[in-house]
Image (cartoon, rainbow, N blue to C red; front, side):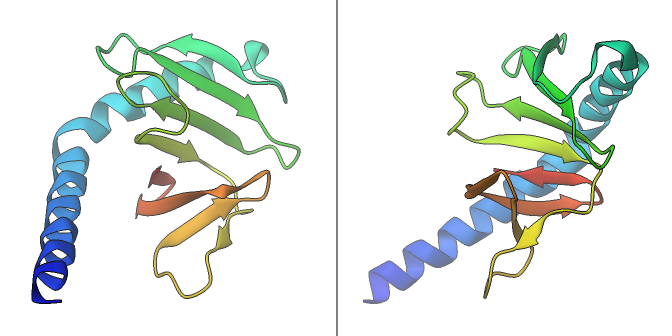
Length: 125
């Protein structure tokens, strides 16, 4: 029991540190990619499109506009697999808070994909 509590505590500290590093060191690069995608407004639609990020690791971003006019951009982890760790930019207000989970949300069309809020419009999955 003590070992499992220590493991969970250690994992929480690790995740908190990873999230702080992302915000401090990487977020500006991601914001720049979103800005470039927004400039290509004519390419955006309600279907996901691939956009190069110019970054190693998350080398492609998937972006689309939603029916409410919001933009969603998925930055998948290093292997590009959608169920792996990554980040999301979401400009809308349609997220659903996961009951009993502070700062945890899901998208209406992806209820199985939990998102942890990092900062305004930025989430981690």
